[in-house]
Length: 505
Ligand code: SF4
Image (cartoon, rainbow, N blue to C red; front, top):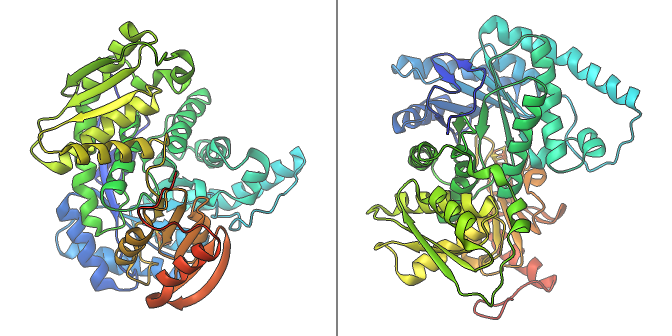
């Protein structure tokens, strides 16, 4: 399998797009006005292996300080390109484009106001006029980027589509793809080619389906911009690693994706080894086959009817070719028999095993091979193997074995101890498998990006948290010390609490 052919994007000394290897990147969690801390974390990320480092720039002042951060990083002899992350503030993007090698904008809130879930009605001519307004503002930005040699990422998030887009194209894959395409068409008309595109969601199947849809839509319009892959709000620990490996991995093994970020609600340096494991394993899987696994898409669920009365077949495979070998075996010999898809891992490193199993089984499940999975490894007890399998199946969106936790990685906007808060929420609530619970770092993007969570624990100010039920703020700016209790009390008051160990089916 060859990687998808793209028009490479140049970000200073890093070129994104095949035949260049997949680029691994990360983002700082320091305050962008804290020059010393941001320089130190950027260098630490570069030393850990990040090939691009992103920093949030929420205002013009923050964007301007990127100049000092860049100078500090370069003075230390580190040449990693810097990326400014912009939401809601075009002026900050204009400022940042003068200081860093790449700017990420979010079309959902760059010129459009943040979403309020307001239904808007447009005639075709009204809609065209809206696009003209965007064009008038976006073209000068592209010109500035060209003058400064600054690359661009158009970064769409499912959780921040604008009311304009949602009203016309819906709150799903179609809206996400069109949100990107509107900006890409302007880039193309201006002959601006150093563009990378991302389409992220915390729902893994939605993310992968949407990226595939975007690839097809770009091809249909003669575009081949490189892709940045990631699963947003993936959380931490095993769940975060598995969600990222399933979502990113199922695309990379099919040759889709040119740069990746594994978002973990942990120290950002922890993201790099996971990202590297995903890239190396996916390269090996991709090289083992001549056709994409995802070619069938979810249609296989419909195509193969399983008769539970038939004997169960077990296919066991090993190594990078295991994914395709099992798919082929099911295609050619399973008929309507139930199947156990078993893959043997001889890895002696637990992290490596987790990433490989998540990529392999996640890819099979997302491609529609909805059979039983079995992870064979001397590193795992039976219970561990079952737990890992459950987490992979849940990441692929096929069943719930624990609460769905949505948690952002935090960034320079985060003003409280996000990793610790997330751990406490998980400890208290992970057994509530009927609920989706969000832990988000900031009040600006958090509530919008919570991805349909039932409850949200959202950082509001230094040491302050707001508690949400759906999109409704129930407790505003309460002390972080009392926030978990307030969240649990709210879940109890809503009749949604279940004691640990009680039947929750
Ligand atoms: Fe940063 Fe999290 Fe806020 Fe996103 S939601 S801007 S990652 S703190």
